[in-house]
Amino acid sequence: MGPAREDAVTALAERVRRDLDILAYPNVDWVQPAIHRSGLHVHDVVVVGAGQSGLAVALGLRRDGVTNVLVLDRATEGREGPWETFARMDKLRTPRFLVGLEQGIPSLCLRSWYEARYGEDAWLALDRLPRIEWMAYLRWYRGSLGLPVRNETALETVEPDGDVLALRVRSPSGPETLLARRLVLATGYDGGGEWRIPAHIREALPPEVCRHSNTVIDFGRVRGKRVGVLGHGASAFDASLAALRNGAASVDLCFRRAGLPGVNPHRWIEFAGFLKHFPDLDDAVRWRVNHHFDKVDQPPARHSFDAAHAFANFRVHPGAPWTRVAWEDGEVKVETPSGRLAFDEVVCATGSAIDLGHRPELRPFAGEIARWADRYVPPPEEAHPTLEQYPYLGAHYELQPRTAGQASFLERIYAFNFSAIVSMGPHSTSISGHKYSIPRIVAGITRSLFREQAGWLVPALEAYDEVELELPVRDCAPSVALFESPHAAE
Image (cartoon, rainbow, N blue to C red; front, top):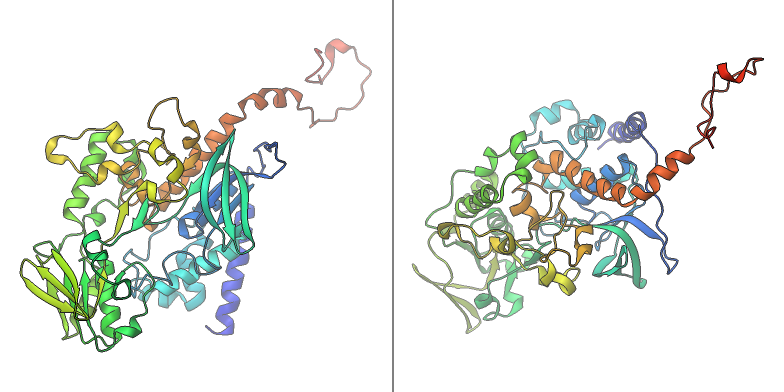
């Protein structure tokens, strides 16, 4: 990027700040400060995760007058999220024209940034946005907005402490306690559990030859080796392609389905009614939609599929789950219904497991969180032991207590991560859902904070005595006075 383009990007950041100033009304910090007996500062909201969702929540809160906000992320600055850690796709799956992160401010949107950086013709010629460009945009987004982020700070556990939440965090300087009225868990795809390799594979193989696709992998070590990949989704093809490009002798991609899906149902749901109002549907419909997505699933991205198949040493094995895995004579032996395979290393693109008790921040009270199994019983043909373990959320992403009247502090914690999909919709916390999900969670937080300070409202209103109209002194009787103080009756 030349100096002229750098100047254009800098000028765009200034325009963002000007646009925010123009659109600032009402710009009053209205949340009354909370006082804690410890003397520690009480944040109105702490957001865990400084990726795309966490940054957008922080901006939305600030625009609604909630500025006592802190965003935490365990990563170093500029390395938040998956985009330059374990994400390997060349381009994003989502269309380039999606909006939402900019929250109605055109100067803040992806297109404005890309055109400032590369020119309008480059944008018009763009098919899908390169992954590394998305991360560059997010860095610019954060820097232009000056959002309050603390990096290299990990949330370890949460404890209720009266009317606030005590957050035990750890940073390079050691352990620390932060206090917050509300907590947003913008913790991504594995925010409701963990990336998990099937137990029969994990327990059979040395960790150095068996890795999950959504972890950092040095693919340089697979040169000349036979690599097995388990899974059929986007990350499976991305991992296969990374191995092939790094000189793997062969890559065999195996999956249990009889064939790859060709239809992507996720494209069908991208309309305003679904994205905005899915959480307002009744339980039976929400359950059926999620059940359908689990059954049908989506195909891998076209560009990754084509790029992998361009290699002659890439093979696909449908109907080939790994029923038995063993480490014998220095190689991975795999049995499938269609035959036996042998590898030097394997990658499991097996997604995440929903397990609230595995998350350190939820573990102490995971048993008190309401799941879908606690609220809805599907018909037998729609039973699904995994879906029923997802948290049953309130209308604004807030956790719910399993037992009414107990553990009410849970409603101060918002699960703005993948664990929200059954309650809030398949795209609610992804790029394509932000246009509607960010206003929803922000409205829920501001509503609860406002209701919490309802006792302050009327006395503050009655005490308000800032004179707006200074009237001249007139020699007239009181009965025809032009101005009366709001406290005259007192």
